[in-house]
Amino acid sequence: MTEFTNSECEGLIGQNVVLGLACFFGITANLILLGFSLKHGCGGLSPDKLLITNFAVADLIALMFSLPLHVRAINGSSDLKDNNICLARFFIMFTCFAVNITTLATIGIDRYDAICHAPVRKMTSRTTAHYIVFIWAFACFTAVAGGTGHILTVAHGKHVCARPEQVFNKIANTGKFVMLAVVTLWIVPSLGIIFNRFYGIASYVREYSSHLRSVLGTSGVRKEVKLTKICLVMIITYLSLWVTFAIMVILRNRFSSVSVHCAYLWAYSLAYCSFAVVPIEYMVLDRRFLIGVYQNCVRRPKSKVKSKENGYPIGRDGKATHTTN
Image (tube, rainbow, N blue to C red; front, top):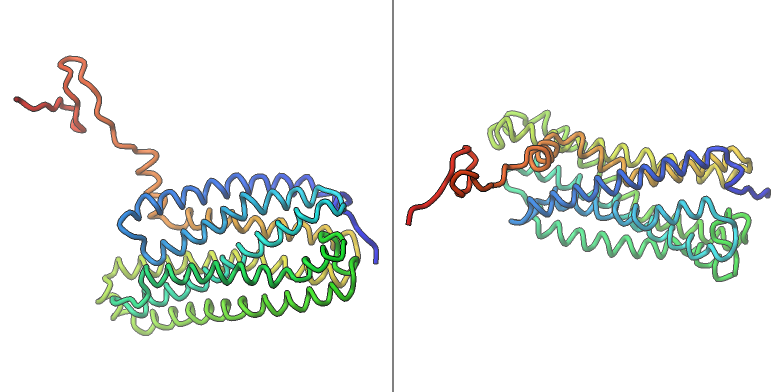
């Protein structure tokens, strides 16, 4: 089978630009999300805020560590010295991807609980924290198990960034089988939970809208439904980018051409952009978050300054304030 190098792709410079922008804006957006969650969650984060925070942490790790390795891998050579780069890229990316998918499934459970079990919620911040610990442990395990083919390739002294068919068919088949089994193990149940919960929410809102308004109030129902819609948009965006990448992986393994290889590289890079696009999407769609950013960053409260006339501090009403001994 013909071997293609990344340098043969004409859009490589464009990919580097897109990845650079995704890295900058993605890190900025996720840091803002984390900052506001920690600032306004001193008394304890709600389950939905905990899950969004966990999503932002996984995005930050992917953008700060795996994405730079991806940039170096697509611009590097096919030397064995790049094996460590390709292995680290895969394991960090796979772990963060698994964390995000299972977090999205947990968000579906939280949204169902917030609407269908209102006003008494079964999912508390404590149980959410336990879910998050399990999510990270499970993601790390699946990353190691899913990378069996990569580990075997390195053990045989072959280049791990190369196409599987260019290494050993036995290793490639073993890696594909284990990867398929591991991905099926967590992604199918996660997707099942996501679609089941959101379908349940839609059915419940249609059937018990008057009950919800009496329990949560009109504004409360709007708030929960809007947050649910935002989470659904996030899920669709995230899955669309990664499903495209999965399709290109299959096509790349079946067809040998420069165009397919370059399309695969673009799909790979765009999948990395999901770590930046989804948090930015959340910030834009959640008006409450934008209002909080505006109030804290644009309209900062005036700090007290000294009066030039009498030396007393000036209050927010513009009048000098002082106490008489």
